Image (cartoon, rainbow, N blue to C red; front, side, top):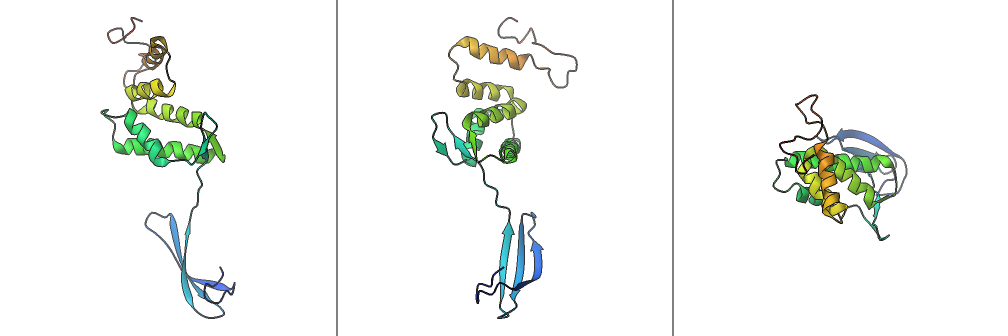
Length: 170
């Protein structure tokens, strides 16, 4: 690390400490030439990929927009903010792990739908109806049947729709 006072490249680390979260390292340094001390901070610099929209435009990834769209789908549903934040974190981690500089918006939409399906089926259907831009009621009904066909948690061996609650007489 170059000394900010005299520009000499020879500096020594005299003390190293991590912050409470462990995501920032603070280093006290001493210049070998002028003996002045200074502090540096080391943190991870992860770059989220740019988003390529359907029309070809590119935009920066927006954490708030992602969280907002999920919260909108989950509005008035029994899902905690912590669960929503964890889902957003999983989506961001997945995007980072892809290692791409650009990601199509369709990929993000699919990741959101996957997370919403785990969190709340009604929110999943809400999001899917807007995201997939259903042309008619049959497409909407198909997504509902898909959700109903999944095995219910806590009731092993029960797969398929519940005849009492099947909206489409399946």
